[in-house]
Amino acid sequence: MTNSIMVIFPYRHNQTWVFDDERMGLVQEPFVSGVPEMIEVLIQEIPNVDEGFKLLFSASPFPGYQAELTWCREEYGGNWYAWNQNSLEGWLCPALFKYFNQPPEKIYCKAESLY
Image (cartoon, rainbow, N blue to C red; front, side, top):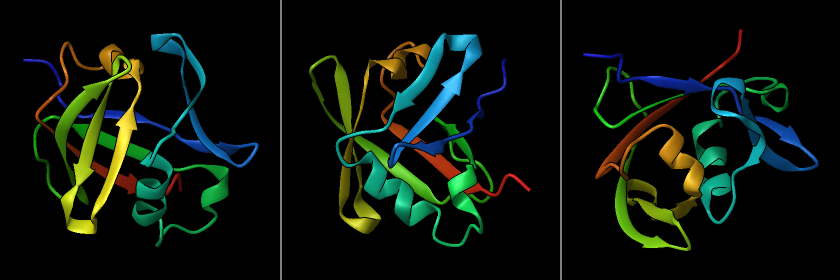
């Protein structure tokens, strides 16, 4: 069984949350359509967050996760997820398929400081 917790390192670029993942061929991949609002909730307690942060995510719960996102629907090749606890919804673009073969029913995530 492979490790089911993945990590990316989002940062702000031109007032937009983006991330790079060289392994997946992604450079300045933006978060859009409701996901930036989810990120703002996740990072509230992280100092110097504009320099970036660590985002752990998995299709399975893990100790200390902050958010449970639930799949809602497919649209424009991406997928909408709801963070019911905070009444937020966000669209994850087709880059999701670089990490998962199919859209997981749930995505669990946690934001941490880089330091």
